[in-house]
Amino acid sequence: MALRATICDLKSCIVALFIANFSNKKGENMSRTILVAGHGGNPFDPGAIGNGRREADVNRDIANRVARDYEGVTLYPQNRNLFVSRDWGFFQAGDRVCEIHLNAFGDTSANGTETFTSTNATATARSQASALHNRLVGIGWRNRGTKVANFQNINVLSGRGVHAILTEICFITNANDMALYNRSLDAVARAIAETYGLRRRNATSPAPQPTPVSPPATSTPSFNVEPFSGRFRVNSSSGLNVRTNPTAASTSTVIETLPNGREFNATKVVRNGGNVNGNTIWYEVNGRGWVTATLVTNITPPPPPQVITPPSPRLFRVQVGAFGVRNNAENLRVRIVKAGFSDTFIATGSDGLHRVQVGAFSIRANAEALRTRLINLGFRDAFVNQ
Image (cartoon, rainbow, N blue to C red; front, side):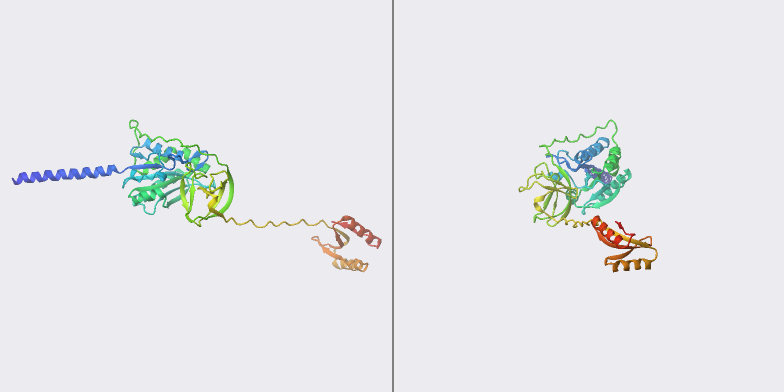
């Protein structure tokens, strides 16, 4: 009986260990690697636009390429924009999430790659952000650093125990950045895959099918964008929404809200944008999005007053003599003054000569008349000098 009891206890222990091990494995397998392609959705948000490309299209292409070539990828539905839909229930604690974006700026010389976590990020997320960032820098983009910013999506997901990061792979508005991207499609996909330990898909493994992207519900209106330079201050107690397009219609989504009193630089203007309280003017905020002119105050400093220097008048002087010795010039000056010409003076040139001159006239005929008088009085070397 004792032996039988011992055998039963041993069987119970083995079963318990098997169940515990199975449960742990099952929990591990439920943790997913999820790629979120920024913007897109329906209504369609194109994101930033530059070099003939829409950011949403590029973000989606990157995510789909990783899912095509590597196993173990879950794609967030691409007919949804997580920033707008906020369907946080799609994610589970322990999921590894990479939100894919491209950067943009009004100054097209801005370039490089940067990777973000939120202030409440997990240690795993911070490690993954650093690993992905180093791989992207290794492809050739300028290192703008790993940074902390409470972007809505990664901030909320981090608070729910998700290992969430956001990558700004390069600047869609910089021609060199985009040329490097176009040459490095496989390298970008591999950088993401290696960060998450994804295994390359073999020829017989079917890739997951991405959710088809719905076309825009309505056509995006055409706006006339003009270069502009100005500085503004938000004048709204409830803040001011920054939108993807210069309109408050459904074709434009809110990127962020600027608090009252915030100052910003505007580098572009649209004068035929969406009508807000009778005003159709919209300004681009630091190259990131658009705000209506209705709720801002122009604080652009006035340009310095233009100083116009009048041209020097063309003067005609009557010269009577030139001497290497100043005393000789002074003696002649005294003789001419005694003859009745009190405005006689000596001008010393860079050549060291001391010239005796009489008067200065803007009209040459007046200078010629004076010259004639001086010659008639015996100062025969007199001539008109300009």
